[in-house]
Amino acid sequence: MKVRVNNVVKMLVLAGVFGVASSASAQSAGQWAVSAGVNKITPHVESGYISAPALPQSQGDVSGDTQPVLVFAYGMTDNISLEGALGTPYKHKIYGAGAIAGTGQLGTVEALPPTLFVQYRFFEPSSMVRPYIGFGPTYARFQKATGSGQMTALTNPGAGVPTTFKIDNKLTYSGQVGVAVNFSERWFASAAYIKTKLSTDVHFSSGQNQHMRLDPSSVMVSVGYKF
Image 1 (tube, rainbow, N blue to C red):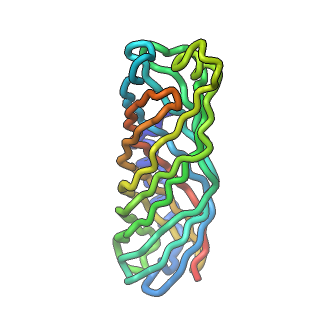
Image 2 (tube, rainbow, N blue to C red; image 1 turned 180 degrees about the vertical axis):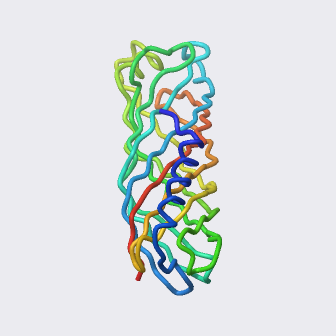
């Protein structure tokens, strides 16, 4: 699955079209906002090789996933906001690549990547459409890693013991660009594109290791209410 920036641009343009329809107040200092929506995460994998005794040039690939989210935001000033999201874990499938491409699903893992964004919202609080940019820390936590029979066959053939693995948790950072559109004084919609810098390491119970550069991108859309 691929997430393209031009898809986000189309969403921003569409939001701008809706934005001229009526007038409403936007998020301002001291105001809370809560929204519900979905977030699609797509890893952009650059895989290292599994260390010996695996087949030379054995690499990996990781699928994307979409999950529901709740987004909370607080206006520190009329232009600066804090935003965070809560959601269910993202479930990623791991496949062989490189010399082991086509071997099928090697395993699964769940990921929780909470991020706290500091945002700058453009225009005045009374503006109908408010583009924003954000930046903040992300903690990528991996859990429930499960290997398959194919993983055991590739990493530890003939041992009779299933191969397990774990992925290192990482503290990193994310950038964000988006737009909020107010349909009334309280109700609004938001669309955002998020890019996270993320590299980590995989450790197999068979003693092998693998470095993975994931650098996922996300597209989040939501509808919310201001208090």
